Length: 342
Image 1 (tube, rainbow, N blue to C red):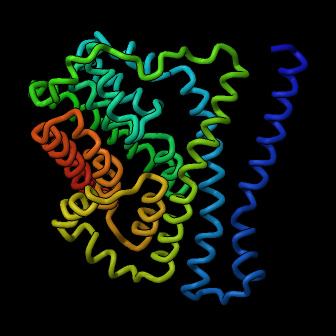
Image 2 (image 1 turned 135 degrees about the vertical axis):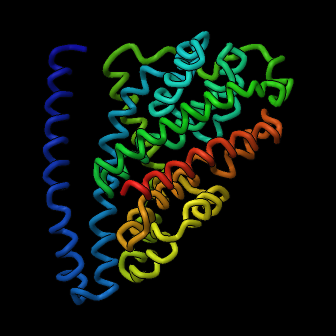
């Protein structure tokens, strides 16, 4: 990259960062002006509260997503699926579980890539338990979830969610590995030759990496923004209209059955972090217990029904049941632990 081109990138980046900060710092004032001056709503009403919540949170979350997804897109340019498999293959299982969980946070993963990634991992010598650590971590602890949690609930909750999500991924994968359940993987998986999911190397230049970041913004934010707006709209409705006493009575610390009920309700739901976290914020604001809400969120994101249906192509029902059971128990423990501490 020539010096002149480098300076153009640098100055453009600084200008974009300055504009981002200026807009972000004024979102609260814009939300108040939009709600009470432009829309003419009466302060203190349910509708005004809901509208102000939506007008403030929607651009804030989308701006945070663009910023962080761009950065993670650059990081992901170092971790293609093929390189991830090479890193994990041949590792000792306990260390492999840790690496797999960490790599899951920065590696592209969605339901459509579950089958080829699983086949690629198994056929290149990655232990089954290590593979499951990756499968749990990738959808549950990703940049979308962490950005939304940080933007809506603060860094403490985001850090707690990330750490407990990684622990669940590591421990679940390690437990499944100890059970030696390879016999419940469909036989054709082991008969396949190892085929690269994406054999291309990471981009060679920083110009390529910056393009990877921009492509990640277009791809990820382009796919999740409707979920973000839908989730914030639901959260705004809860924020403005649902009485605090109602949510506290069914999702508060005093209801011992709230955590397992939240997990059971969350497992069959089809959503992602972008859609569920704004709802989580509103539930917490109305008195729901942190542990119960986090358990609900983890069940929705980490044990989604469509993902388990796709995995049925390579796993027998017994192994899927063990996977859901082990991860579900981990989520229950996290829910009760957080309710006891906070």
